[in-house]
Length: 339
Ligand code: FAQ
Image 1 (cartoon, rainbow, N blue to C red):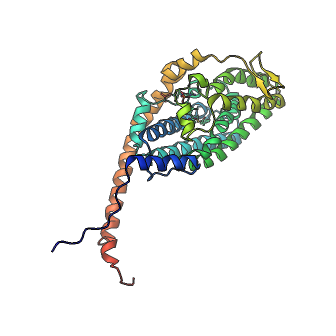
Image 2: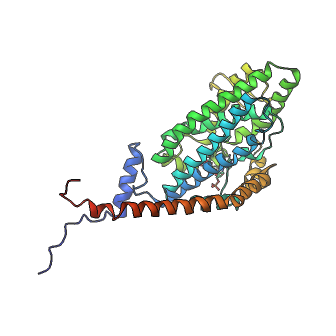
Image 3: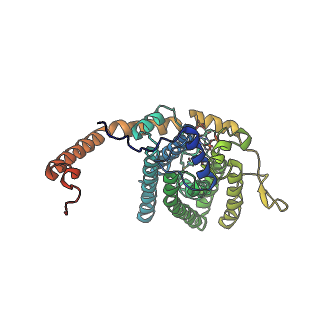
């Protein structure tokens, strides 16, 4: 006699899964790693999260260059903590990408081979110590403006990673601003260093928000999926509105003669961004692209032995634990047997 057929639930078809996904997005609930998602959604997330992770890791370099030259123990400790935070952000983000099926080593290879991007901003050199303060103020300021809305991104692991990242970026922004305030209260030479750094970083910081909306191929779909919550231009405008009063308090001039307040619109108007420069930088031809990637490549290759040793050690520990614990848990914990 054959066994009666099991009452298995039938696998929902693709249309039903898509409908559930759409309803989840429409209700503003989160998509989690085990949920079904359209392939395009998964690909877009991996692209954006990987680019974001790469930016954090490459972003350690410009400020890292000043670790040995920071002017006091206090400044060195602050900078060291900040650069370590960026490494941590990269790790959370690579972990978020892994929940989508991406492989961390593969993502790093893609970065090094120029097959995945990282933020344009990190392809500019840090020429003086004032650049450290300006990166904190402007670059972390732009990062916060762009990333606070990502705390509500539709993909759960990305949104949750962003909460902690944003808290730390807020600290980074304040330490940068505090450093600049200190320099502005110092000598004429220090004030000139700050102004020079602002002149060099202002326009690249505006480019961090990405191309203008009418030239942003990914925005419409990413917003429909709730991955991005605002358009590139919207966030850029918000950043300018936020930065102008901060520049006034600091006593620096933003290098844009067209910057003016439009009372009717309730926003600052600003001059034209050099999009040709942006395209040059993101296609690998910015002032420091080659140096950044060469250093990342060297870090991967020179430290491969650490990864190998850690992997071998982890495998050994897993083996030891398995032999100490004996047979698998299911075998020992038989149903109905009190432990
Ligand atoms: N640089 O269609 P869209 C930080 C690319 S973290 C380079 O508008 P999307 C912390 C874009 O990937 C900074 N490439 O693209 C820190 C796409 O290329 P693809 C990083 C850029 O994705 C502070 C193409 O252009 N933050 O600063 C840039 O919808 C201090 C078309 O663009 C994030 O990654 C750019 N600036 O919008 C660390 C935040 N802009 O991939 C150390 C998360 C655009 O098709 C020190 N990401 N591209 O080949 C985002 O919000 C979005 O991905 C955007 C771009 C807004 C960056």
